[in-house]
Length: 77
Image (cartoon, rainbow, N blue to C red; front, side):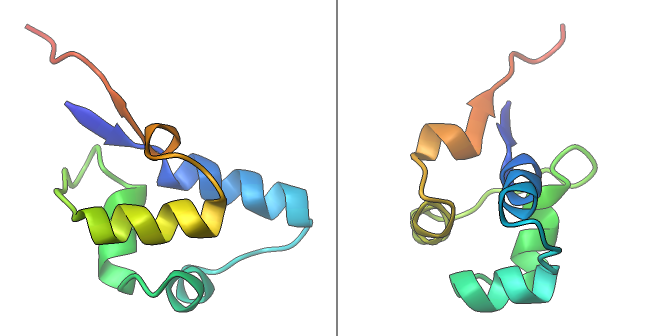
């Protein structure tokens, strides 16, 4: 299963900038719909498939690579 790390990157950015960044601000800065971001920051409860356009926008905002945004976790058997 693919797990998104958007929440971790978001929290790291807030620590670096020493300020709170709201979901609305994140949405406006990235151009990614707030509902999409909500699903990406909580993928365990709401698994979500997204587009490469969203991944591109988030990589640009967080100045990272796609592999920093998502990781593969083997399914439990």
